[in-house]
Length: 231
Length: 236
Image 1 (tube, one colour):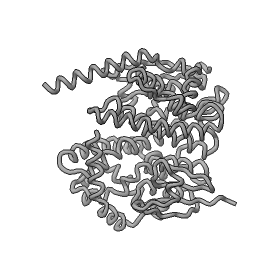
Image 2: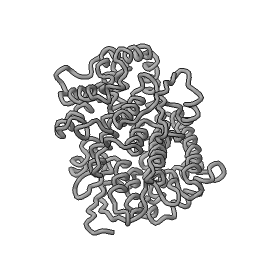
Image 3: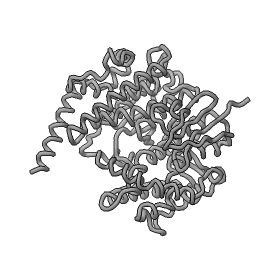
Image 4: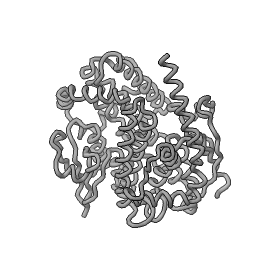
């Protein structure tokens, strides 16, 4: 009998989404445990004492932390459509490389551009746009629906914060990241991601998500200003 | 060692990320050609192999590029003939997840805080970096206890992904100890790690791949002098 799978996550967390979408894509049944990040549960603090963050995957009695580590675990521990290409070179170059890009190079300027104002914001918008151009180039050169093939995979999940938040970028940040006719391949990728059946089945309602971020806006603005001072 | 491995590593000897990539084939018994890059004057080969980041290390396998040290190490591990040496990652998905978690922790927390302690713009920033670095080392002591299961390495009986990730930093961490006078791997506070440092350093693969500590100290002092000169120049 299969061991139970539980996912501890929070509404609005793009990291939780990565793990949840992976479970849906693999067809793994799971129970979602909602965590209130302002009032963290005993369970979360016990399972992830180091970082105290969501998501945490519980498979039987094994806890796995860090969203991208979780996604890779889900791919390897369960049967179902592969989230990474089989061939070692493709795994390394398209899948892992672009996942790393999404996580380490793109996410920071994107997040900073979202919450900062004035001159600092402009700098990060510029950087985010440079990254968009690189992404556009890759998508056009590859000519597939998603970042590493024709189905949603590891790098798409790593970059899923973009399809999740692009629509509300202008409202939350007060500025635009891309014009309507810019980066067509990226726009198409966003559309494909949001239309995927498995992804759709676990996407938070857009209105709920936007409402969540509106409430958190001031808090995030303060956090990024503090982060900026440290650089 | 297979002839036709055709592995070429574009790197720079001071970079711990380059060292990380050198460690992997060393432990797997693979040979590779080392191409030393002048970071201040990047070659066409580097720029065309890694157009997105323009950074070392880049591994060329039969001329095809693979970038990002952690990606390269996993590639080498997955591709190399199992007969050449034990796998750096367990076949058990949960153990793999634990290894990946700690490898990410080393880069996100230890490397980041160590860099801040070195390159911080103010004394306050630097000392905050140092504080966080020591906290990260203490956490890794616990990780070693958990992962090693009484054996000598994070990978258990043999070297694994986490040993390679941490091991790649050893020359720089030892250089930092020499320059600051503070012990990072204190045998009293972090006995398992202190023993691991000795053990890892004795491995043939480590001796081949890790740069000489004195050379790193010299390089670090030169870099610090350059940074100080640049700061002084910009204030005038």
